[in-house]
Image 1 (tube, one colour):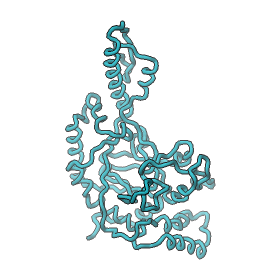
Image 2 (image 1 turned 180 degrees about the vertical axis):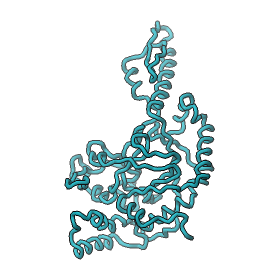
Image 3 (image 1 turned 30 degrees about the vertical axis):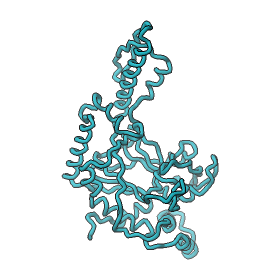
Image 4 (image 1 turned 60 degrees about the vertical axis):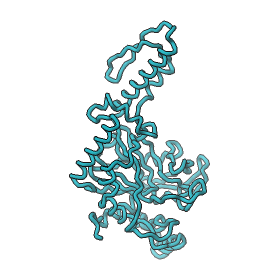
Length: 364
């Protein structure tokens, strides 16, 4: 069947070269409205009122198995999500076009893809220094290869993930401190009933003061600074670099899924950096395999990435993965951190990225 959304050659080229593509209008205005209403009703079912988050935001904790990291909530299968997003034909049509353009699907071997690159280098010579696009296209062939053999780009499964719902940092900290102080007060009153309590005043976010009739130690006072119920999700990969081109996982078990493209649909516009939105390190998929093949010793030279000018930067070896999660380390992977940038996504649109692209959501 024909695509509901047909990607332009420029959009396909952007994805191949950048590893990231933003596509607007995945949801129709009616689908967007229904999705927002459904989301709001789901939150209210869990006793969270978006219009009164200061009073009800504490209930977000019970929906997060990540302790608030990234504002991720364990909401998987509500009807509004399944109907408007998971089975959305526009979303799948874009995905299958990107599968077809960016992945080997006719049974090509790894040796064939390496030979194609070698042949290009021999027949075309070294790309001109001013022609960065040709240089990037020359690397396209090998990074399209995978060990899973031929597949039908028209068919696929939805890997259903969770939901992101970020609170402003000040609000998340205020709610967290209130929870902590209430718990602390109850614990201290229980353990110090026979002691003479002295009033202690703590400064709130709005610079007002509240009296807690209990004793608060210096250690407990310090903990007040780190009590936010949410925090940003730091740069990471949702794959294990060491096992990426293997049909087995890190535990030497056959992989249960292959997810070469990730995406999410935005329900609110986020076009300003440092407001909780999506961040990613573009073009990293072109150097991913070189980066991942070296020893994991600290300080090992792994690969070089152009920083946008004539200088060449050195990256460090990848950190160990935990399942399919790989943390990008601030010190050893500093060059990746420097290249992380905000990716604006409009409401009702979606962002698609190569599974080998480090990504995060920002502070807010």
